[in-house]
Image (cartoon, rainbow, N blue to C red; front, side, top):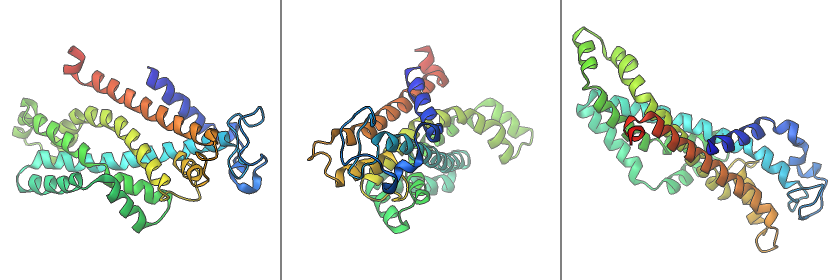
Length: 267
């Protein structure tokens, strides 16, 4: 419940960003504060080196960070679920080929692969979502495959097959509904990883330069020498927001896993 409350708060902030802060404050031209002003009544979280309110940047940055997290996770879940179900259901040489392909993605370090892909594809929001989505699916594929191998041997699946049910019917009516709770619980955990990945890539200068996210705020603060100039208010708000959102998604993911997994619920 604590994780759900924290997550709900940030979702409300992201959705209500136009009501909470004027988007003109994101532009250096529309900045009204001084350079690196500390927190005050006018600017509760201080200003950056361009005179922009850090509070405004953090509020609007929540929209991009959460959007990247959700869309990248959706792409990752679709790829992982399709490969995992297909490999577990069909077996044979198709399973071997798909699992070796999955292992190839698993053994390559995520960050270097993501950096290379982001550098090749260019700096844009769509490319960041694409890079995170196509590099974070192998773990889901292996989990889904293991569950599919268990489900397809159950008696009701054998009865449906004996009655003439085809592969598509078995997968959509019997395999997927029983695998979906695992996919859903894993999705919540992957969102946290996707947000951290977006933050990392943006901090390294591979994010969309035209969109403000928590990662780009940290990148600007690092390049602007916030640490050496003692401007802690420029670094702290986006950093705390990232920590709280990732913690909230992780707590919700573990809670859902305990609810949907009968063995954990009994224990």
